[in-house]
Length: 255
Ligand SMILES: C[S@@+](CC[C@H](N)C(=O)[O-])C[C@H]1O[C@@H](n2cnc3c(N)ncnc32)[C@H](O)[C@@H]1O
Image 1 (cartoon, helix red, strand yellow):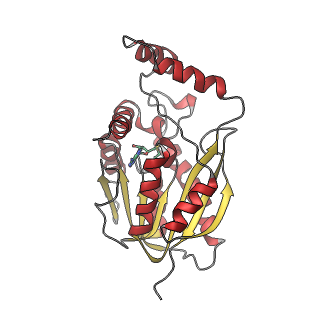
Image 2 (cartoon, protein in one colour):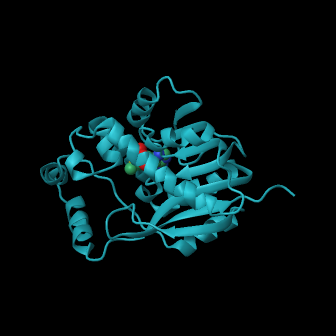
Image 3 (tube, protein in one colour):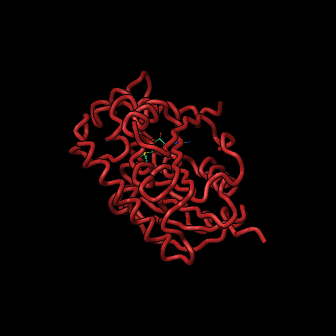
């Protein structure tokens, strides 16, 4: 397995074991299992509502979808919210502990499936399986090469006439250069001192990374994969002061 992919998987498995709700919505006051589940799930309803309004601003988006893919579903915060607006939802995640939590939280709910996918592609799904391919605060945590591969896969598994919607940040918060320099210096510390430092500073030796991608690159990738750009709305979900976008695309219906 590619070492970068393996590292991504290890980070999210550790975070899923240590503090899954905080790893998904990382509010400092919620660290250490302090999220109330209902309050946490309400943040998902609000996030999905934003995407629904975005899609409704594009011609022809339905009120209700047949089958939604929630890529990087974590504990299913957004899958559950989408289940109110879809016949079926499939959540997919790289992290087994995240998916275990997601299954527990959704127990007894119909039309929900969760899949662990420790692969850099979506070959687990057939072409044209979904009428909405969706992802929020997931693609930002992987290098662009990997994210680009998944976006191409979204276009493949999206049915003709279906929709693709996701978020990606484009620039860090102004003045965050010192933090990223510190991160690079810590990465280079010998004898496990990097883990020791991170435990001291962040409460865990495992931290996730955030990557930034310019919108032109995102649009070109989806266009080349056969999806039409529809809308892009400014967004700072990657952190206060960051720049980024919620994107919406459509795969043309078959002629
Ligand atoms: C910050 S959490 C967001 C979870 C969910 N999207 C939400 O907003 O509630 C990021 C999630 O992306 C997942 N993830 C990271 N890389 C992934 C990959 N290559 N394939 C699938 N899931 C991935 C992580 O395991 C984690 O559950």
